[in-house]
Length: 121
Image (cartoon, rainbow, N blue to C red):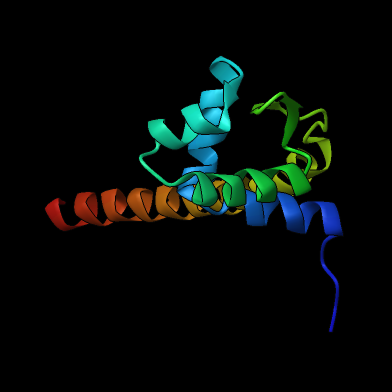
């Protein structure tokens, strides 16, 4: 099988594929939070939240620290440079395709205008 991405990309996109995990990242972007607070915010069990945080932690998107009985979560240390570069390559491809499509549409509009003028003459 052909490998199109590395393990970091796979882990990041797998983590981001879930709406709850994206919401957790948004929440942690505002302020650090305990797993208990996150579970309450997202109306889920502690076990469920621990699993979501674990996936984010494995991807390097979240870091946790246990102080006493409280495990606090914060945004992780890993930048998303590789993911951004991967997405940018596809954004550029689609942008060039849409630009080419715009040109075709414009040509068709011009031909239609020319045909309309010729019918009236």
